[in-house]
Length: 316
Image (cartoon, rainbow, N blue to C red):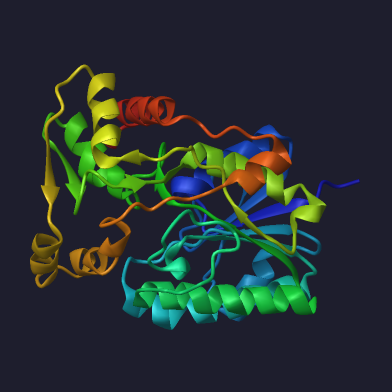
């Protein structure tokens, strides 16, 4: 009997690359889908634009397991125009192909939270990007609960780890400068606790969820180390790993806001700095209990991340 197909929508990147490798290592049949058509060895490659409904349907296979990992430019204007259409196309395609869907979400929909974020935390977004994520998550949840499609939502905190360069604030501000022999940087406050999800843990967790029938119909927080570190602790581990003194600066919120007047990406980061002016704690105990999974400790994850980017061509 032919092995069921696992389809990764939005291949490559921080989670798509290690997820494809994880599934291949488990003997699964994997298809990666992107506009570029790039893929990992051992995977089927399909070129498709998820903004096109017909291309989205054609990218799937009857009864497949689908992972929605799409990354869009970090611009709320792009998110507002693209995300609702992409989600609608994917829901329709999964229904047509009787495929089940895993949506990798972030925590933006929760907004400014007091206390740990859990799967029961209400969606009270504090930003336009958060409102967009809340809307598409609510749309998917509605379709899940009416039985139109079989799906689950998996949420992660901010990423760090191998393959997370273009979409990782701690890499861009702390680890990359350190690798280049420069002082590290941090946003708003280096004394606030902040959870970070390790990319390789997220990939392993998604592979587990995709192979677990009773995980569908639920929200899951992907495994994330606890307790969280503050910025100074995170940067300190990185500096010690490379045998260097801790040197860093903090970018105050006002400075980020001023820079945002001249750069759209920095403006979008400024609008999310509510995540950095308070403790921002992500609780993944539901997943850890269900699967007996121990998240990678921060000291090990930071060491592995630095080693990865020291050896990856052109990454540092």
